[in-house]
Image (cartoon, rainbow, N blue to C red; front, top):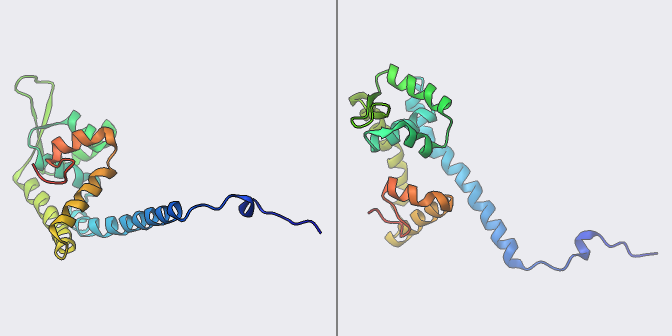
Length: 177
């Protein structure tokens, strides 16, 4: 009787390192899914009161953190279509959370600002999420906190890291500038 050799058994033995690295990557992927689910939950509940979703939250966050942000810059940050942003922005403007102003030098520019109402909501959402992040970092050593920030920064596409560093104030060292 001839020996039947499966493709799996015919393959040279793989080293344990790639398998361990792959397992670790899958573990991190899964943890990111669960962490993101819980990270957005409190904010989602607060947004639902206004009939808003995560897209509204992202727009509020970046406009609150960057007063006078141009619509074109926001499109680049969020990586969404003009049509998608238009719908969300219209709702935020109509409900009094954001105002649009013309640029002083170029009247074609649309500059975005949160209203007092928008600022209060953006800060409440940040407080909810900040509480969860602070709780997670409470028992982590300062060097480990920097490693967490550096890890998250490294997940960002390399060609986007410079823009993210300028926008957020975080650089490759993981610290706030």
